[in-house]
Amino acid sequence: EEWLTGGTFGINNIARPEAFGVSFDGNLAYYYLVLGLTLFLAVLLLGLLRSPWGKAFTALRDNPIRAESLGVDIRNYTLLSFAIGAAYAGVAGALFASLVQFIDPAPFNVEASIMMYLMVVVGGPGYFFGPMLGAAVGVILPEWLRFAQAWYLFVFGSAVVVLMIWLPDGLLSIPDRIRAKRQSREASALRAAAGKSEGLKA
Image 1: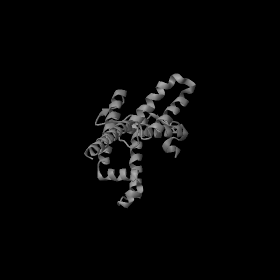
Image 2 (image 1 turned 90 degrees about the vertical axis):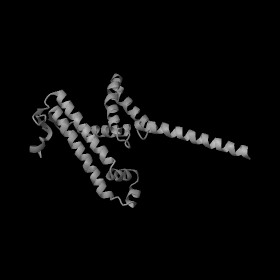
Image 3 (image 1 turned 90 degrees about the horizontal axis):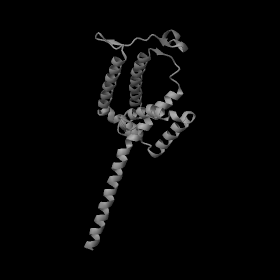
Image 4 (image 1 turned 180 degrees about the vertical axis):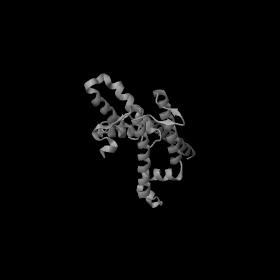
């Protein structure tokens, strides 16, 4: 309803929060507020992921059929995951509204949704810090590509496509890939050594 959201005109004069007599009206104070809430919510989410609920979420993400066969209620856990995601998005939206002190529908378009999705994919959707790294790349990389001017979107899109082709699990999968290759080489070396020793015994 327009009386609640302001419609296309949005809502202005949004005050910054105040808690326990402490005002967060200044930019530096508001920065520390956002940083503290971010760390608190990150720790809360990390604890959730390490709990039995988190293991159920992981099983549901990796293989829903297997998770259901193990007794995970797919419907309830899917709804719960959407509810948790919506709650975090709501907190982020409230912080954003207080930061700019004005909110309207214009910034929340399809392009913004796609960009957020790409941040998750680029950082690594299967990693806790993946979205954070992806967000950093999604903010910094476009600024570095400003020199391209008219070619900016093309260069940025091409970089994301190449990254998704070569690193489908995101940037944070690089250490795991290196570790897997090292273990594969060590296993091959052990098999070769075992083959040689058997040949000498024969």
